[in-house]
Amino acid sequence: MRVWPRTLGMQLVAVTAAAVLLSNLAVAIWFELGSERVNESALMDRILDRTTSTATLLAAIPARARDAATKTMSTGVWNFAIRTGKGTGAAQPMDEEESRLAARLRASLPPDEAGFPVSVSIRDMQPPDDGRRGHRPRGPAVQFVVPVVRDTQLVATFYRPPTTAWPAEVLAAALVAIIVASSAAAYFAQRVTRPLSALARAASVVAAGGQAPRLRESGPHDVRNAAIAFNAMTDQVTRTLESQRQLLSAVGHDLRTPITAMRISLEFVEDAELRERLQNSLDELQELTEAVLSAARGTGGEIKRNVDLSALLESICADLDDLGEPVSWKAHEPAPLACRPNEIRRAVRNLVENAVAYGRSASVELAQADGAYEIRVEDEGPGIPDGDQGRVFEPFVRLESSRNAETGGTGLGLTLVKAIAQGHGGGVTLENRSEGGLRARLSLPREAVAA
Image (tube, rainbow, N blue to C red; front, side, top):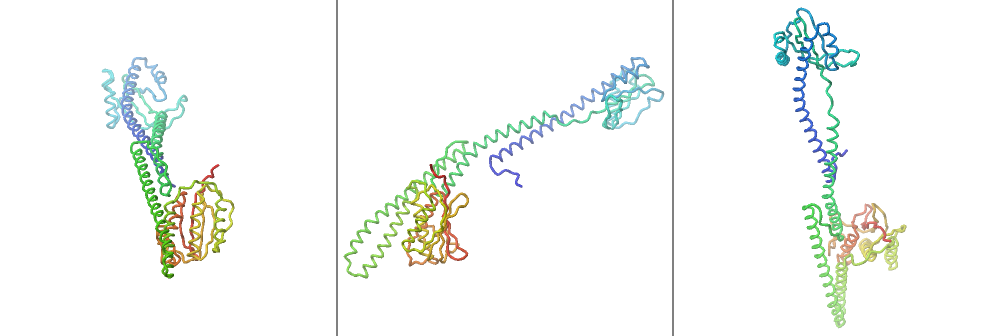
């Protein structure tokens, strides 16, 4: 299972939330440790003061009232008891920490009691159950034995309260900080990722051969510079393509005039064989000129219209069948599409004529897949080697090893098909059929039909 988010915005939010959480934990632990040390010192001062004042108070009251006084002063964390009798002043063994507390306690006693032995014991003890506090489990406790009067000692036991978890305020503050910081990170990420997403979509349109929309030059400085550079690039590419298209169109139109003049001059050639060869050359030159003009016109000059793609394909196949071409069409239900129908007609006709010329027949069908229409044209020819299937879309490329040179062709037919497909946001691919022959796939996105 993938835990780390894929998008830049969610990654920024996740990193910010984690950073805020860790910083809050570190600060909380730091203050917890520091306050624990301070609280421990202050607590021990209060315990020693409470023990000393209690012993002084008991020394000032009659002996018969001391037991009642200790019971009254005992609480949930304090337990006081009176120990009497000879030998109660015997010293108890203590470790270093207990000895240090005993010295502090002895120093706080009145001078007349400072000579009596004092002992401190730190260990786990079971608090007494007097019916008021209820049962409590064993826990850390500090027991002090201090003199009250001769042969009378006060046994004061302080039971440390259970350690409480971090207060809810700390957790609530951390949660609020995470929400605020994550919201700020999401807002900033949106300012960055929205222009980047628009840039990615525009780049995809350009890669597909379409006209990219101009990007809004907004957002942070770096993102804005990227949008400015992309707009400048698309403007330059558009100007370059338009210049090339105008150049090809001018060349094609200029070639028509000398071709026409040569056809007129050809009528005065008396040698029939020479005239036929020249006529064939002029026909080939005329075909090349018309192909150059078609490539120069490219796509985009026609306005998109709502058509039934299935009916359009059926009419193309019917026209070629009337001309005696071996073309078959597999009937399909209506397929509404917003497109430039003359360009689609030209592209499909090129594919079908190639299939007939190089593969002896053409079978045309229409399919739907992944939000697009797919026009499939299959033939029964020798196919194209896998390594050359991309080259045939380049201008003026003809593969002698897989196509018969005697069939003619300018090498611009598939180039025009690719340009038309990309101009509609689609594409065209070739593949060899397992049963023999070639299959051409022309995909067109199923754009919403305009009202």
